[in-house]
Length: 474
Image (cartoon, rainbow, N blue to C red; front, side, top):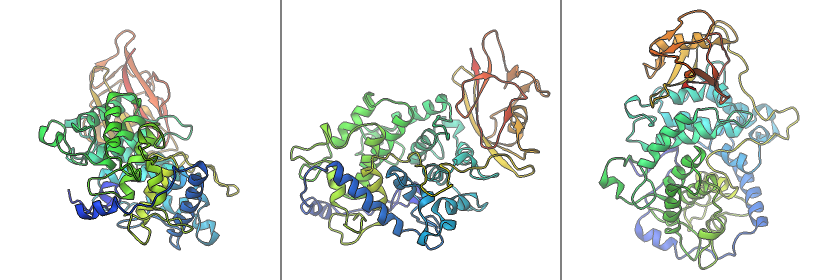
C-alpha cells in the first residue's frame, strides 16, 4: 500500500513517510509540560472545537470530493458539540448535519467505484452527527451498503481481505453505530466473525498493520503500526471483547513499549506525529484504558494526552502534525481532538442546543416505489452465517419479512443469502430457510435492530432501515 494514505480509500489521515532523521529530531524538540489536568483538557477541547468550526465551508459542508474533513463530526461529538449546531455565520439552514445528510443521500455518493471504507467512514460520521446511518434517506442505508461487501469465501472480512483495514472499520462502524436507543443493531454472531479475523491478524509484537497478515508468518513477524493498533484494539472492544482479554493486553503492552519518556508520545513507524498518536489514544479510549495513568504515565511523568495537547496552537486551537510544524493540520487536529476528548472512532451525538433540533434525524418510512436496501444475516445455528444487502422496491410505507426474504432470493449482494423459504407465501410462521427446517424447540427466529429473537413469521412488519437477523435455534 502506498505509504501516503488518504481518508477516501483507507479512512486514515494523509500520513507522510518521515525519514528516520526527522523522527529522531522530533523526539528532541518536544515542549515540556506537566501531566494534563482536567482544566487543561477542557481548554484543549474548547479551543479545538473552535478551530474545527473554521474548517466548515461557506455552504455548510465538511465533506466533499477527494480528501475532506468529515471526521470532524466524530471529534465534535466526543467534545460535546452537536453537528446540528455548527453553521457558517450562524445560518442554521446550512448546519453541518443537514448538509452532510444531503450529501450521503445523493445517488452519486460516494463515487462511481466505491469501496467498503467509503460506507464505513460515512456510517461512523453520520452516527456522530446524529444521522441514523441505516435511515439516511428513503434510498440510502449505510449499514446495508457495508453488508454488501461481506466476503463469503473468507467469512468475517469485509472488502478484499488484503485490505485488512476494511474489516477493522466494518467492526468499528457496525458495532459502534448503534440504534437511536443505544442498542447494538447487528447480531453478535456477525461481530464474532470479525473479531476472529482481527485476532488472526495480530502481529507477533502485539500490534497490527494495514495489510493482511493472517496465515502469513512473514507478515505476522513484521513491525506493527501504532495507529492501526489503536483502531484494531477499538474494533475488538466495541465488538464485546473485554480489555482484560490477552489480545488487548498484548496490544496495550505494544503501545507501552512505544512510549517516549520525556514527552508521552508514541513513537510511530515513521516517527512521532500527532495523527498516529491520536489513533492510538482513541483505541485506548474505546477499550476503557486510561491514557493518563498506569502503563501510560512515563517515568518522567508524561502521558500521550500531554503530548497531544503540547501540539496544539492556542488560542487558535489547531494541532500540528509534526512537533516542529509551524501551522496546524486539519486532519491532525481532528484526530487529536477526538482523542483528547476521550473519544474512540465515533461517539453518541449530543443533544443540539439549537431550539427544535432533535438529537437524531432519519427517514421514518419507506417511500413506495423508491428502491432501497436492507441489511440481512441468516445464521443456521451450526456455524454457517450468511450476510447480505437486500435490494428491494417497497410498495408501501412498510414491508414484511416474507417480502424481504423473497427479494433476497433474487437480489442480494453477495448472492446466496437466501435460497429457499417455507412457506413461500402467506403471513404465517416460517418453517424452513435454506432447506433447514424447524425441529422441536429449534426454530427460525428473527431480531430487528438488535431486539430479542422471537418466532419468525412471514407477516412480520419491517420498516425502513431495519437491520434483520434470522437465527435457527432454541
